[in-house]
Length: 81
Image (cartoon, rainbow, N blue to C red; front, side, top):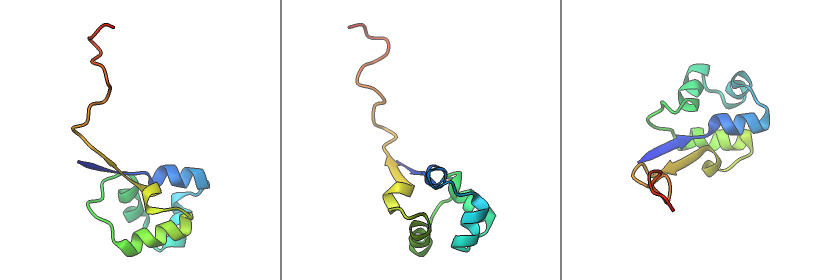
């Protein structure tokens, strides 16, 4: 199980820098960077709420679940059709 953080994608779509987001959200650059790179182990709902408000998005825009055990393709690359 893996939770993927798409903060960088949403920021790019909004053309917002990490410095600008830091100022608007009230989080340090260090903490935002940890979240942006996917190294965070947890996030407070209040932080998620503030990010969504500032970025005008939904929590699902920032976070995604990826099943590590799901097959990556329908066919084995060694199989011939």
